[in-house]
Length: 235
Length: 295
Image 1: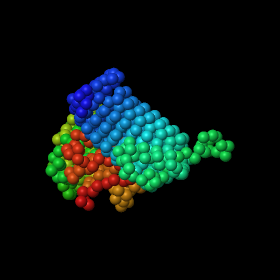
Image 2: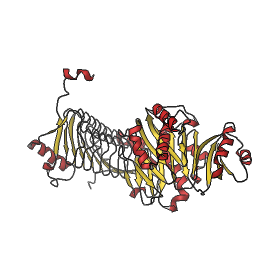
Image 3: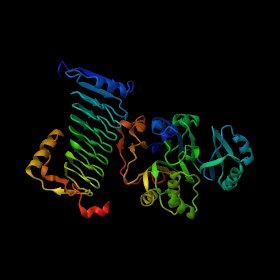
Image 4: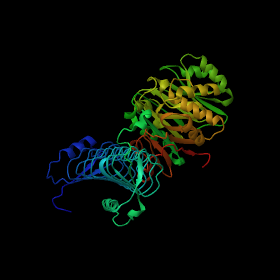
């Protein structure tokens, strides 16, 4: 390990999440305090939310709601499952959940990478705005609802109404899709998409282990972009 | 919001600790529902006997009431509640006496179930009734943040609408008025204005018609409209179901020793062996149930 790396251990059985987050928020640019080991998270909420520093935060167990929310720059590793809204509104950096994620994982996230080793529940990537999400299990219903930008790669299956009212995000699913949401359609897989999948596999640590051609691509049919008079009676 | 918890033991060795485990789970859920709390525990029971849990105002003389009920009746008082244990054949007679006693209500009945609920901070409610000392095979609990009806003991969960049956609910039902009318016609009594009691009544009605707990839960998907995660107990069974939209949170854990439910993982974090438990989020519109009789 780099001799300059300063490592911190925080035990949430004794310290509060507020104390932990205050310490993380106080990090200045160029700080050497780059490794934070968090013990006893016990499903507590908002662990390592709002970090804006290139540090690594390793959390030794399951976390509650909004872990790593608004994350910028940091690498956050959850050695367990995550509650609602992990990586919500993330801007950059990496969040890696070793277990399952509950609902709304990566909701509204603008950037960075969210990797979930297990399953993600309903509404994964809801209103995503540029994040790259990789779920190695399956995603629940209404995933990528109103997704605007970014990519979602699902190694397993997708639940009902995938990509409902989607704008321009790219969705890749290897398994079955229970149903597609309004204006979400299957699209042609071109070289650029296979290339993108290849990049996503790399970021998820499965470089070269999976064949991109096993995936189907889904995206916007672009029929909801403008008002159409035939739909007038629907309002 | 509301917090719900449930615990179903598979390992007999944990039975003396049921109350302690359930009380720990309920404590953590205080901030999801600080206005009232309640729980039901399936403890010991004898065949041919019935346990009636009664509720009365603070200071009520349950012992005196017990004397009027007769020598074959025992009364065990816990704060504002008392569990009356009597020969099952005397149930109707005792209910009639209680109905005539001012301010006393029957909140639960069954061979094994005891049910306690009250307004107040859940951790204090649990302490008042000494939940941590209770023993049993399974139990459910609720911490309430009222939405559909007033903050009263009547509005607190669990609700029991049949012998050894109880339900806790996180969410709100939008068609409880019409289901209430159906139950009325079917002769299933629903006593309060609370929407969750209607859900309990609905399951009782279905089970009265011969449906299993699991089937009754599946039926509820067609007939109950709204947001819900239910955790329910029967004499031998324990079940969980979430509505198809699944807005209300739920986490489950299973080990060789127990099945546990919590609104959030925090509620499960203190359970023995949780590090190695199978932990998952129950799927929308899928009935989960366990039955001791089937085991």
